[in-house]
Image 1 (spheres, rainbow, N blue to C red):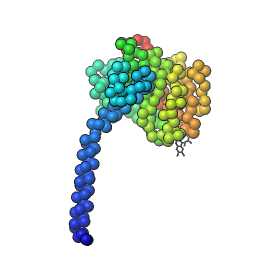
Image 2 (cartoon, rainbow, N blue to C red):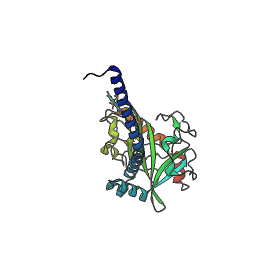
Image 3 (cartoon, rainbow, N blue to C red):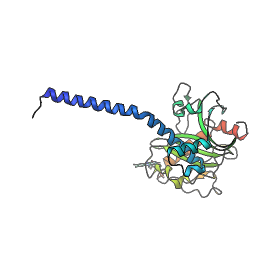
Image 4 (tube, helix red, strand yellow):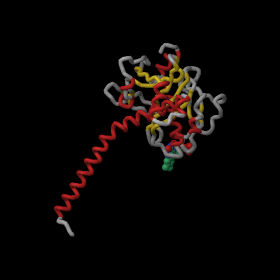
Length: 257
Ligand SMILES: Cc1cc2nc3c(=O)[nH]c(=O)nc-3n(C[C@H](O)[C@H](O)[C@H](O)COP(=O)(O)O)c2cc1C
């Protein structure tokens, strides 16, 4: 049976409205779950780069949260001074938003292409009682196609690297995307972030670096992905430097923070 043109238009319009309402409702209803999953994913990344033992067995949300809450302290500092910001509740502080809010400032020109800097920054400490065992710093900067977001873990000497991980990037799988390769990430632990003058020195070189004892400041390049490799060098050095966590780390080393 053929329908009239107005009927067909009305029917198509009604179907569009109903589908639109369904999609919008689903998006709104699922938002809290998506947010909770993002927090959980970040917690998973933090415990895994922290190298805490429970990270290896924590598979479900309850175990991940227990592992995180039992080992990790969230800290918010004034990025420029490196001093703690006791008025800010770390749990409510959103670092990604802090890069864009009204307190953020334009970043000095830098090779990592970080455009703005937050006034405050959140990072993580692995604690055993009151003893800080590891510092986990958020890092971000440009590779070839995308901003890479990740974490760099440093030993309590604020120099020896314990691990690196990237949780978000858009580099090419098999090329720049090899930043996710566990074998490449295993290159980082045991190398030194800084040189003897406490300048950021760790870098991804072109080719093969050798073991940490022979090449304390070099990591193997990603083959066929020199631009991403250089991006990783730039972003890691930026966040270790004076415009990143440098002021906090030097205070921490002196036992003042
Ligand atoms: C489709 C395509 C995707 C690429 N993706 C990346 C990438 O993610 N990271 C990167 O550094 N280079 C990537 N490259 C290669 C770069 O253009 C460039 O050739 C490379 O970084 C040079 O590295 P090499 O000196 O180690 O060969 C890609 C090239 C093509 C054609």
